[in-house]
Image (cartoon, helix red, strand yellow):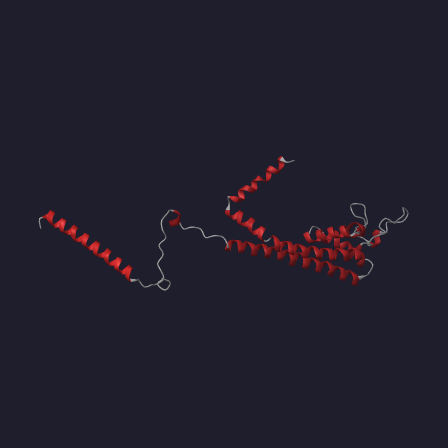
Length: 233
């Protein structure tokens, strides 16, 4: 089992690919904001799970109460045949029987995996087949509000947090050296005269500058004299 962890050594390549390293850094930087958004999403899921247990745990509770002489009671009241789930349980007890079952159903609805057919339409069929249309409309709105809040709003908040962290990581990335700097040459940029600092020279600096000029001029005169002597001028 420990040897199987060597498969994760592929993540070492992230250190050598700047774009991948930048993505990992942005994910780490967004961990705090994403965790807060996850807490909000979990609270919303828990609220709707508690309400679902109160509303739907008793639906189709008589799914197995039928005799061999009478036709199944679900055929007339439930033409879609959803009273008993594939796990041989009544619909309400299976999907919304307790808090954990209801919380998992809310997560299934959040992911969009057959949530309408498996978790919502049996509820609407239960009330509409009994001509309780107000309840059917209310509970349809109940699930639509949950979908809008959880999927369309909070999940987009996650994306916004990740994009903000990625843009911040790109802004903080150090500038790449120029080609001239990489080759060892100095980048000579024109100086801005407005930003150039001016200061006055003191007497010692002026005297030293004068002596340097005099020395250079005397050396040039000697070189000129030597050149004229060689040419016989």
